[in-house]
Length: 304
Image 1 (spheres, rainbow, N blue to C red):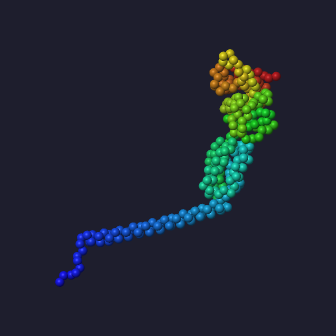
Image 2 (tube, rainbow, N blue to C red):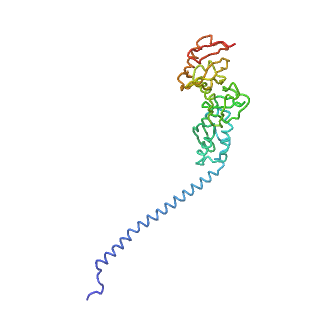
Image 3 (cartoon, rainbow, N blue to C red):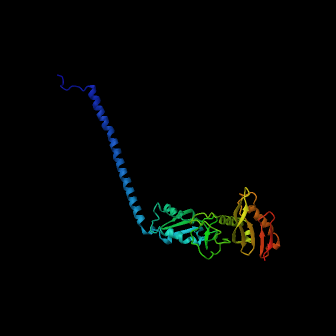
């Protein structure tokens, strides 16, 4: 007697086998997805917790800056005129947390906008609430008499943000004109004073500062005058000419300032060399001496 159940054909067997195989492979995939989901949930929780902790730390008063926690170093100590503005910039950041990631960047941008600041050298955070700032400043190198007032400039001729005053500033050499209108064209703060008298006066001062003669003839002032000089095509031009007055009262008749652009005139280097040769004479060291280095035949005499 034969059974009524028919044997499975090959097609049905293959279908059953594929279904079982798919079930066996689906198990590990589902497990992996569950593990990944749990890992992402844990990471999300950790990040959320860290964010909340960071928000809480930003609000913590122990990390907040105030005026006493900003340290100013570098050339600020050499320039008392700049201290008030440098401190005011720092005070504007009162209440900012030392943990604020934008603090250093914002502070550097604020200082870089100041006329005083040539470069922000470095900043260093000192926990819990202090930041030290080192700045390279434009230091006053000379004072210029213009319009009845004295103004401060740095070695490059940049006008510094100090209000002009009637009395001369202490400790700084002067650039003065023989008449009140001799020096003109005063720029805005931060601009370069392009007047020929200012440029030439500073150029002469730089020549002295770079020379060992600065000890023998420390500059008190550079006096600016005007003279008529021959130019090309039988024409004439008005150019500035200078005299240097030392702290001891000695006078150096410098003539025009030539930064090596005019071939027929002596340069500052040549004039300084002539002056150095003249000072080798003992008679040149007496008070009230007038040196003349305007030509290639320099000399000196005693003033009346």
